[in-house]
Image (cartoon, rainbow, N blue to C red; front, side, top):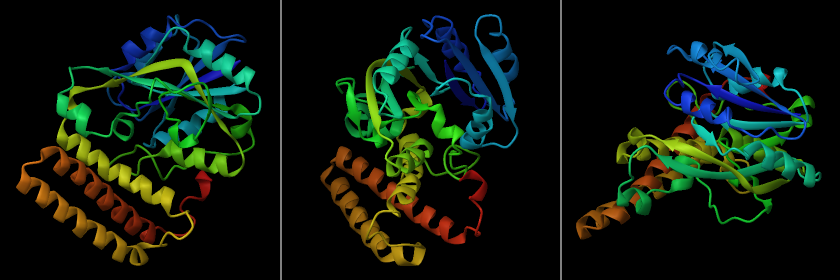
Length: 314
């Protein structure tokens, strides 16, 4: 058996389409259940989920403390079976999604992490600049459909379409609740942080080419302002990942010289691109600069963090 786990906050705009697609899923060998954690929603999400009670093997949970990883950890006490499939409230699966994930997990017992294909479902036709200029992977968690089945770096496994063997969580591992979507500004990469921890323990990842979901991309997410704001959150996540690498400066003050040099260099490149009229180069360097701003913000936030703050999420 496997458990599908979704955390949602005010997901009533996308959940009808998502859960409608779940009703069309072919059941995997051993069966499945769906656990949805309502993460402090105020938009009728509870009633919407319960409207699918007769059509889906769904269990509803409520978590009042806002934070995707808080909600995920709340749900881990309700999983059954040997495989936990994680997805999002805006990811629409193909009918054989779970069958393919189940088959890959059974065929590759030496692997503990599984990632599938994530394609975009644009709610409005994307402007050409978006497809050329924006880094689609960090912006929308889109993967390359040409990747073949086989071992993959765990950094390329994303929350709309991933699975982890249940024993990982039964042995006590949890999502870090100080990272990931929450109220206000936050560091991206909640699943990446967990993937890297598991990789350090020797748990390997496998790519499942035939396990496919489509990630809903709303029109509000296709603007330069939204994308550049995402760069700041992505940069905050980058600081989290990189500070554990050998040779990386530790702490805010130690990071200031390199951050300042990078900021000045990128600002000069943006100014030069604007002077030449090269809008694409200017936008790409603005993305890089916003990532740097995010890294600086996270370095400062970590320096202010009280000892033991993350204890209950480890």
